[in-house]
Image (tube, one colour):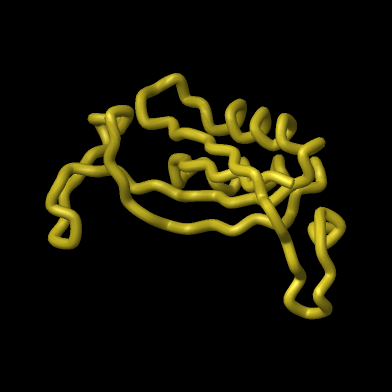
Length: 113
């Protein structure tokens, strides 16, 4: 199993989520945040009292998936989130060492279904 973390533009979340669900990937977690990086879109940077540095609004999506679904998920996110501009985001993939369902102690990739 793998954990996919994608940082995207907030306006594209609904479209990405819809595409993921159409392909059978419905178990996602979404976080709203702010961030700065070398690829921030200079046209959408802003400052705030909480974060004095110039930064952009961002949404982080996390999806646990069997290894067989990783390429599809990455492709959906990359194709849907790409505007061709700086600040489109980034995708990270991490190995999952263990997964346990809290309700009944089920383990492994079958708990994702």
